[in-house]
Length: 309
Image (cartoon, rainbow, N blue to C red):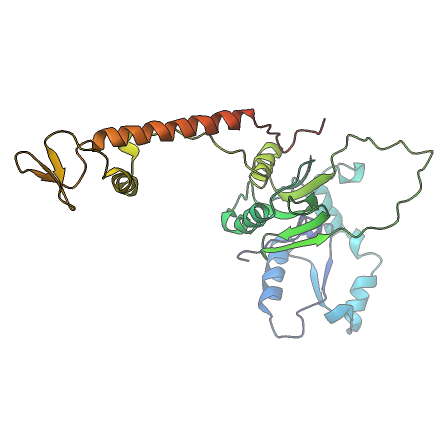
């Protein structure tokens, strides 16, 4: 059954010794429906002796099927007892262990106080579908739900994202009457974060989810690197030329309106002092970058999961 999974423990619950009848309530009208045939094949491999009963929409029409369902002794016949004792030793003592579920689905709730950036959050959610990995599905996020705030609104939003359908719903939380305080209950902790998201998926890790969510919040601006002569673009060089091509010329040069000509008749498209002009430009740009970096360091930045003071 490509791209399909049985409900966890379905085949375990259909094992020999435990089940003698299996009733199919859909896809029974069509002759040998592919899904019905596949499911019957799987169950037959698990339980070769089980009787299959076709009952569309739960309606049993054959007398012999009703007799199979209502039989009082078929579950306790020697063959069933023999299968139970051999396949599930200790079942009569409550030691029934059918193993772990695969794939292992987990649910992790992440709390935070600070608003998210709506555009970044939507983009991140929409990108999850393309990152879904095949078996063993580790790290796959299949569903996100919760209540958050966005920087463009004061309202609390209820969000719900389904990865397989790639559908995202963002709706304002409906405001209702606040219930009266209950003297018996423990007062709520005022330090409890306002926003939360519940992630449902396979083998998820909280730290990875927090890193994913941080990318949906306002990003801390990065420091700018200082410029060098080699980093100047052709457009910047052209701008320097346009701005300073009429600066005073050194002795032995003149400008003919198009090019710069020296005493020997050599011509060049750039001012003879262009190297100095470029150095001046880099120095001025670096002063602006250093000022920007100083201001950046003075700005207060709080992590998405840092609680409000």
